[in-house]
Amino acid sequence: MTEDPIKARVLDAALAHVPFDGWSEATLKAAIADSGVAPGLARALFPRGGVDLALAYHQRGDNEMAAKLATLPMDTMSFRDRVAKAIRLRLDLSDRELARRGATLFALPIHAADGARAVWGTADRIWTALGDRSTDFSWYSKRASLSGVYASTVLFWLGDESPDHQPTWEFLDRRLDQVMQFGKFRKSLQENRLGEALRRGPGKVFESIRAPRLPTDLPGRFRR
Image 1 (cartoon, rainbow, N blue to C red):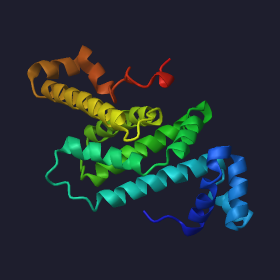
Image 2 (image 1 turned 60 degrees about the horizontal axis):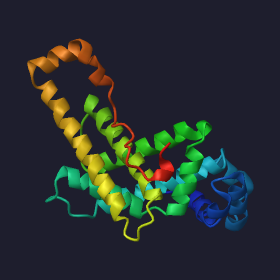
Image 3 (image 1 turned 135 degrees about the vertical axis):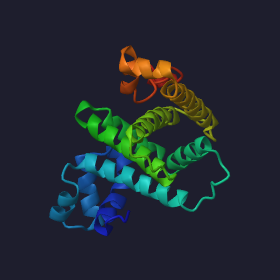
């Protein structure tokens, strides 16, 4: 996906202000002044101000990730390892302070839906980049499960002060292993008569499961 050059100018100018003013109206005003883009045009590109700036930055990261994945030789890797590689790459392409400011913004109830759509978009870009061609219910379940893994990993990563982020990658591995185990369990249900009977009756609840529950081993600052 090609980034609009004028929109990119405003976003580039905004990045230096986000660590101080967050993804906010103040940041947008400063970006307009620094970029030299006409105020009316800039506001037409970012009509909701800071939240649209944050979403543009998130989408830029998704685009960069997808472009990079297209150049990597991953044919010899398992699908699970390809997903792990994609998430690691996506986080490596992110500035932690800008991402932290984004997490703060999207934690607000008024912007929670925007944050959820952004995470879903990342999961969709990963699955698409890795060659997923599903069109049935699994299209949704794959993206929902990966959204849960990605969101919880981002939270862990934001609290991980280690120089190499090894605790984050170990956390990611555990989350993916849990999802893989759940996927195998669900597949086994689908392939036997007991599973068919359960899906028709009480087991209908399985159809409502979209993603793993938020894990309990997040850094202490994120637990309640």
